[in-house]
Image (cartoon, rainbow, N blue to C red; front, side, top):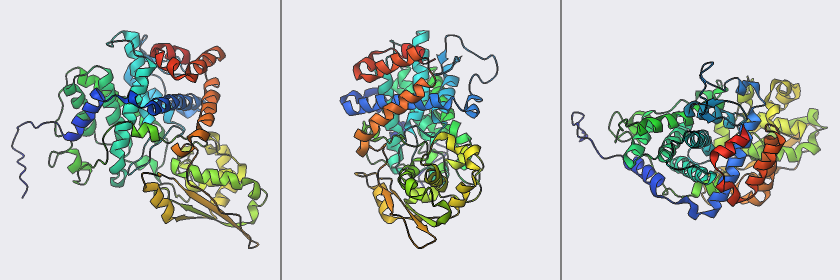
Length: 480
């Protein structure tokens, strides 16, 4: 028999997890890590570039703007690459959907995975609103934005290290909501109790299901779910700032708490304290807009392209060795219904570079997907979990995301087996990856912003000190 008495109304102290997050937001100085601050600047550039790139896709643009026609807010928060001025919650939804639309922003792989830069939707739009309205305690600079980004990355990523919510059917965007609520409450100048209240609400919200990420229901909601989560986190922070009460044992109370209701009665587990680990080790998507477990597979396929492009019809079978996570999440057969379905299919993300020597966001559209060679190659693929790839994926000193591809032909010959352990966006390949990341940012910036503004933004972003000193509203003015 449990000692829990459901009749006892004595209000407990806040759960340890909630207190630890709140104390981290209030007290921890992330600027002690120059590496984290530099990486955060690159992360901001990459994330904004991804958001601007998404504006080329009508399906994304169709969802942007106010909830209903005319519900604008002159002087409110602005949305990069557009003329929208909205209340900060809706602006956060817009930016969050944009930056996540093409599955091209950074990611984090652990027991749970996700995309910590999804939190920028709330952080950047709230900062713009506070500066324009004068509601903040002081003008917010890009230095402050980097601090908020590092803390949001850390909250989301550290929770994910030991706790696998997807294994119980919950979507990882719940961690975006929790991190956004905590960090935005801090930006709003909330007290410790108010920050705890916001965090408690974020846990009580539970999570959306992962239905829209997996066959046979994969669809475009996975592209706007991050915007939904980060804007909800901001809403909860604003609500807490207005004095709404919190729920101290939101995670641990028996029967009704998060752990009992949604986490199979297990306690949350933490292997490290909050610091700057996640931002320093974040994984950038530089080469391909694709689910991260397939990044090295796509790279291997590009390397094979020249040797197989004229022999596609002679291929007998294609063997892909991968990690357990990729095998479980993106090993997919049968018809692929839409771009969101295709960018979460390992076989599709191998077939395209084998055929064309590339993998771009445009390659998920119907014009390319209907090429009969794509499905013909998919049908010849065999996906096998490789024990080494799985083991090194889980090792904290490696965090590898390996894939290998070998092609066998009808005449009995075979290609070399190409394996890649670490994608270009991995910390171990930073020296190689950052120049490519900067090229990616400039390409999508110039594709959406007028020339003089793009030149000025690139000038600001070149230097850490100049970037950090710029006011958020000034930076946003260059982006809209």
